[in-house]
Image (tube, rainbow, N blue to C red; front, side):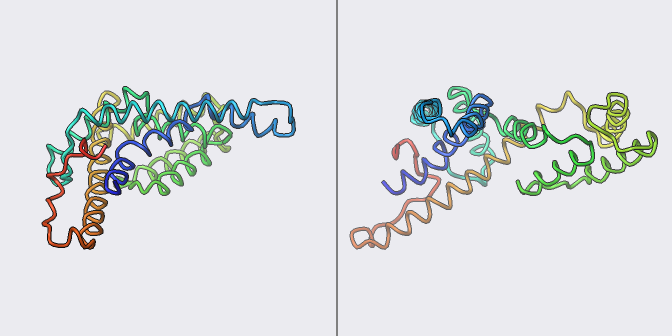
Length: 242
């Protein structure tokens, strides 16, 4: 049971529970609830929490239903296993109506930056969010973007505001030059997203492997299992633990 709980938490429980709070409708309602906290006669806040609970429950049940049918091989070093795991989790997201990693990033950017008025603070906030998520800027894109912003602000002779359509158009043109220089094309974005999903799948399989090994080591210390040989992690079938 301990192993089942740990494996399931990695593969579906966190995936479902956390994303409900990312939905725009809940973001608005929770803020409204906070503002209306002084009105004791209103049950709106209780209803929001109740709706969230049932949504989490339904999404979790849907995710578990998918995982009961799909074979997952816990082998992060096997590209085929990583690819198959990514497909399974994509199926979970689609059937449970969950956000992809790129959609989560986009949503978080919108939430974190919607009140930022100027372009420089906006770019700095994006850098801060990247660092917090542990993402690397291996190509130095942020420095290039800041240099482009410096060029535009020098040209317009004032700080660039996000509602300055002409100024933003100039900055967008500079960003297009950066993308062209780096070989980044809009039509290739689905490929970049697929690569990101594979990286995430590999990292999640590594966590699953780590948890499985720790659980088996804990079980092996128990008297009744000390003489038993533990199976290899990649031979485990998660469906047997759900």
